[in-house]
Length: 391
Image (cartoon, rainbow, N blue to C red):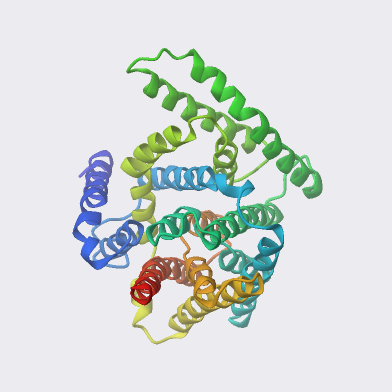
């Protein structure tokens, strides 16, 4: 089988599973992302060996990572509304700094260098905007004070994790023209400028489209073109495209009719690129570490326990410190343990930069898989207990 035919066959299999798996796995409450990662691991070199990643598949996976981060940035539109600043600050102290320190300490205890250890701390700090927003809405906490608080904290944490990952990547591959402080200033300034003017630019061009059946397609093409243009502009600052995609999505969050943009981008991303990205992540994941009793298995257990425990403890204590009831504090703690879009995309980029070895990469991916299963399960149980108590 020639390489092009092989790629098309693999792409067909990935998209086939991407369309059908969510339906088959609904009774198991297994998330879409988790199921594709598991299938990729089973079919990949560390499983049955049916699929071996090549350049074409890796390229599609890279585009999927960018789409996932773009959608995560767009979903960060709740940043300016909701909870008091004091509550946010308390939660960021306990649910941000505590997990970050715990992740760094765990990696250092296993003998990893500071670069890899700090990246693990960034992963522990981060969460998953798309996943947490969906979980909060599914248990009926969308408009409650604790629901808005949990969403805002996740937004701040993922933005902070993206910026910290940018600094870490730059420490390994410095910009050839600007020193790091100036480069960081340029990045932050560009985000502010994009947030101020990009919505106006998009709104101007939106008004140029005729109100007919073709306007939606034209708007979608415009947004994708602007997305790629800004990504290219960020490349001049040596900003990794995955991080740049998140920043562009954050700027697009204030665009008029952003819900329409999000729907179109979700259809494109989840219909083509994101399933391939999740499948590629699975191809590089060795599930055998779960039942092999060696140092790598100990690393997986330590990373998983530390990631869940530090987030759960930090979220609960921070919410209690902010004055929330114990049950509501548990909602914040459990929801913040989920790790998908930002952690997985950043881990994918860090692996390509040589920051992570295979064992640490697999440990982080398995942690993302486990938390994406456990977080919605425990939140559903918590919501069910609350409803039964009220009855």
